Length: 188
Image (cartoon, rainbow, N blue to C red):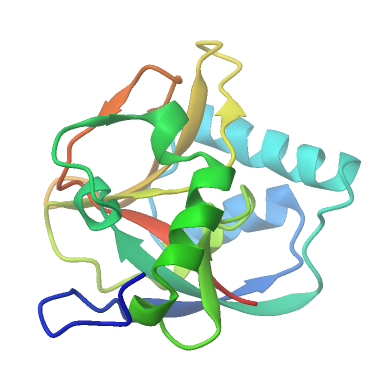
């Protein structure tokens, strides 16, 4: 294991966000009040994600801060496109975090974000550059309209402004090697 040569890329915290314990309807209304475009299928994903969180006892505390890190498949050492199944594999993320601890902020590891946090990030990431899109690394939620597994996709463009969309992410979907995704930078 390398302990950090000068040529190795060091990774930094990208942003910190706060989650409040809002019910799905209040969260959707709040996003819309802020001018965020939320299509009907994403409203259903938000509701479904909240129900899933309640069923699995992963409901987020009333207010929690979490840190994020923006990484691409290339940051993980891939030189070509990578499938969702491999890119979002929790065991692979844990192994990579351990092997690259010297490149991460002290005492932190990379994990997928909770499926409930996407709407909160969208609500707080208001300075997103025009024409940028950013996917959330998270456990996938089945879109009831298409029956495909999806993740949240943050987009901003001139026509629609800030958007919270869904991005289909079946196991076989291939992510471009330089396409970054937002992960949680979690403390050990």
